[in-house]
Image (tube, rainbow, N blue to C red; front, side, top):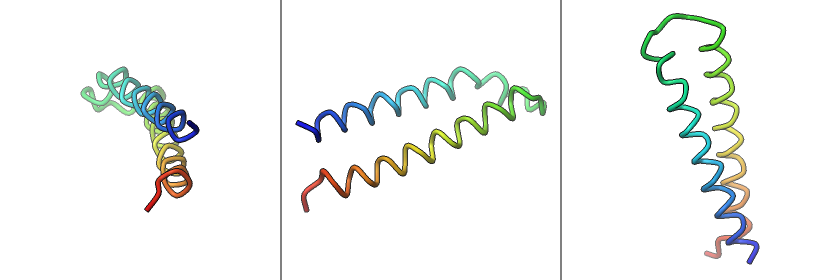
Length: 65
């Protein structure tokens, strides 16, 4: 049961990261260095790094080899 909950949480989290990248895409297309672009890039980078860390920890705990 915990593996299913972990999997669902990871899918939802990844979905929000993809939605966040889609939301700030106009800032990426303009390529103007603004505070909003810098904040968005840092936020997405930290979220992606945290997602990778949580994914690797969950994979080690819940996936049987």
